Amino acid sequence: MTRMVDSGLWMLDKIFGTRNSELRTMIIAIDGPAGAGKSTISRLIAARHGWTYLDTGAMYRAVTLMAVEQGIAPADEDELGALARNVEIGFKPGPGGSPQVFAGCRDVTHEIRSQDVSALVSEVSAQGAVREALVEKQRAIAARGNVVMDGRDIGTVVCPGADVKIFLTASNPERSRRRRLELQQKGVEVSQAQMEREIAARDDYDSSRELAPLKAADDAIIIDTTNMTIEQVVDKISEIIEKQLK
Ligand code: CDP
Image (cartoon, rainbow, N blue to C red; front, side):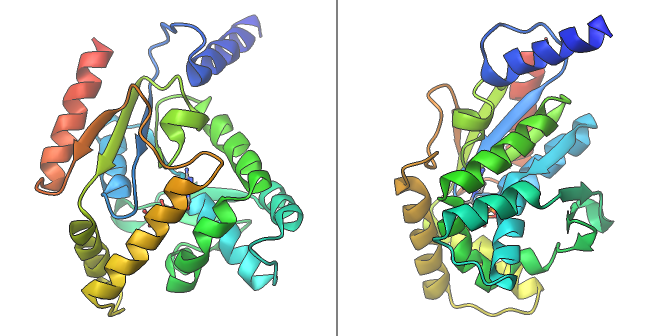
């Protein structure tokens, strides 16, 4: 019992960075703008080490989807906050390694990636009550340890004590190209110009919001992936992790 309490306290120290933890368990924070490759890279890093991957963007997307369906306005902080507190968001390993996302027992993996949700998610995510509720859920998962988390504010707000902080970025045209390819594979056609506008709008919204804006933590390692392959990025981050583990 005492051991469990102790290790719980150690994990809190680790999340908040209040003490230099010697626990052999890792929290990896991967932040960055849309289309920088965070989810692909985070998933591969987690798989390589047998760790948990937590896609925090999927949580904001799930709340946004539920809000749209329940007719809650993106500016209605109280209702959105209640929704974010009450919805149980779960993840299960899916086919091909990418996690399935659940809201309660409903599989929302595909619906949360719709253009409608993408268009509203930044506004919903800017609401303090939503962030408070989701950050609490994210820290509860981080507290289990050995987790790779991707998002916008993991290294700055959710887990400022993370062992490794990476800020992944790439040029807008390259990020738009990647996002278009992803959509094309799902049969959705969007022009390069429109994608660049959408990505720029979301970058602006996410970077300029008052709460937990998108930015690299002071101690984050910035990796520009514009001219890098997925393998190169995974190798680079793995090297950084290996050094930290020694
Ligand atoms: O995959 P993509 O880069 O399009 O974005 P995402 O990771 O699915 O996140 C969708 C949106 O959720 C972002 O544009 C942010 O507005 C918000 N978000 C956030 O505010 N904080 C996070 N930790 C993760 C996502």
